[in-house]
Amino acid sequence: MASHPLRVLVISHGHPSFSLGGAEVASYNLHKGLNAIEGLSSRFIARVGRPVVRHGGTALLSLRQKEGEILYHADDYDHFFLSNHNTEEIERDFLRVVQEIKPDVIHLHHFIGLGLECLYAVRRALPDTIIVVTFHEFLSICHHHGQMVKAKGSNLCRQSSPADCNACFPDISPARFLRREQFVRGLLQIADHFVSPSQFLVDRYVEWGLDRSKFTVIENGLDISDQAVPRPLTSGGRRARFAYFGQITAFKGVDILLDAVARVPEAIWGDDAQLMIFGGNLERQPKPFQEKIEKLVEQAGSRARFYGAYQNSEMPRLMKSIDWTIIPSIWWENSPIVIQESFFHGRPMICSNIGGMAEKITDGVDGLHFRVGSSEDLADRMVEALTDPTLWDQMRAGIKRPISFRECAQQHVDLYYEIAANLESTHVARLARSA
Image (cartoon, rainbow, N blue to C red; front, side):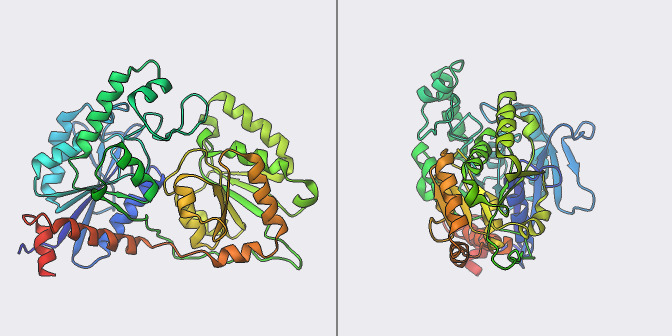
């Protein structure tokens, strides 16, 4: 048996130091969790692009005081084919790091900006290395930002095909969409295994053509230590503070939420109820959407308050001031980190009744569902929350503690050994036999 410990290389499309998206945080938490396991070492490669400045003639950058973490600068990216045109730098710089580390497992948490060619390059350079890919949305299937929502209007897309995709993007021929599908799926099939945080996403990818036996569902792990206590209530007070956490985009349903708030009767809303919106990026949205939100904010009046963008580190403090979290997304979602964060802090949730949201939040147990896209139905759920004094405690009691980043990492290690059981030439398999 080889003398070195199990070596894992986690690859992400972004580093939390530059981008705090859910996938970036999930991949970095996995890296930290793996390094906390005895007899295992993890390295982390994250893609960066403009405005980060690259170092001279190399695509590689280092992070100060971040041992084992490397940045890979990549900008020549084709969003349609999920392809990196700069294969020369993949062969020269990306593979140089990979071959120096000689990982037993390479775990890609995304390939935006990096390009699917990285999968092919790794397989060719290190044929015995186990390759695992985690999916965070439907980008491989759907050109519309991976949302599986129709480009014209907001109807949900239930099954992709070159003809359906052409209906969303008439300037791209069905034949070109077919080439995209064959290119993306072909390179993905190089991987030994796939991980998804939700069963819903697994089912979609299997319908699209990937092998169900190569999928495992593992929830993303949280790195939170301080739990927010319930908000103190005055005598006769209600659990009447609702909160939204996330980006303000057309897919996230903030417009539906604001409309719902205005529909709650004044006698029920009262003076103590409040909608607190934590999020940014409205200024980056199309002008018609911005104008729509501005009109709805005016309509909601003092019932809604905007607090701007926030950092993940602020969540324990922010949770102390709220009672309910609402996810009104009009797209399927997969496993939004706000679900785990809310459950960790014991806050019941109100969500759209589709996709990963409906899978993670059980209606009547730890939260409430409303009909996706219906501000009227959401208003009814808010009325229910405001008028039933026993509901919040009942929902809170039904919440199950989400897994920590260390527990998540251990589940991944168990999976690595399971994959290796059928790959006897790998170091992972030899370690598994000795264990």
